[in-house]
Image (cartoon, rainbow, N blue to C red; front, top):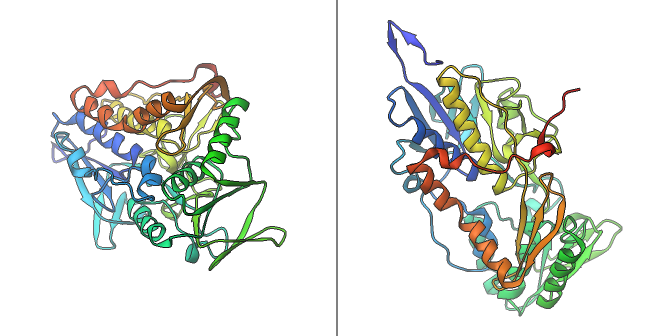
Length: 400
């Protein structure tokens, strides 16, 4: 057991979890519910705000749709976990401390690093100053206010990934008075099978979204977007969904990170340089047999649960088990009344099976709302959260 003993008295093992997104909140609820009968383990969840950011619905918030405001302290009720509100400003991996708002210092015995990622507004000149993002609910609300005041004009959505597609479709449906242009290097739905991709494209066409693939934005200016090759596209509003970046705190703390700044983990999700640190969700570079996982809610929540289970195993003097995860679907909303769901192999390659239309809408909504019942079940039966597709042969990491 890793709890320290001083003068013959066992001290509390302090677990600090940084970030209350899907992965961090899953880790906090799972761990706290597994140890809440023990006075020897203290779980503290740190987040910059009390409001949970429902990232899967931010494109709805961005078009003025009212959603429930979810409170992180309320979601933690009954678990025994403590909530600490504040910005994480530094991590000292040697001293095992976290600095909050440059004022408070939290010591830890085990750290779960779940600070996640945000839109990369630094890679292209002008994005930081002239583009909107969907990093938080507040960001989405600011965009919603701007769109409601336009009355006409052009909205350029940069990035043809899932966030860009869902945002472009939502804006076009809710604001038919606006021209919506979707710019990206790849074709929307490029990872889907041909039929699902064609359905997605036809839905965007029906909504009046102008799609331009194979283009790269090199600069954002007031009123225009410049493309590689010298062409420019007029824009009254620019929404940036292209690329993500993670917090530099992990690298500054001396943790081993990859070229994107994500914490490099071993098979059990522990930092390869600091085994008392677990990294989960978008903040971690987690290798499976098919490669490094990409950030999604479907993969993020299992990483948080696995870290919690592993910490409990370590506290009992057992070795943590390797993490394995296989993808199973890609649901994409196309406004409120249409969607496409691409089912996938564990390595995220597309299967032939896909859903479209109203059936896909119901499926997508069920997936989007699934964290709440999942966390509710974990409070009553913690073991219920530890079930997800392991991916079989696709996820086995073969040693050289």
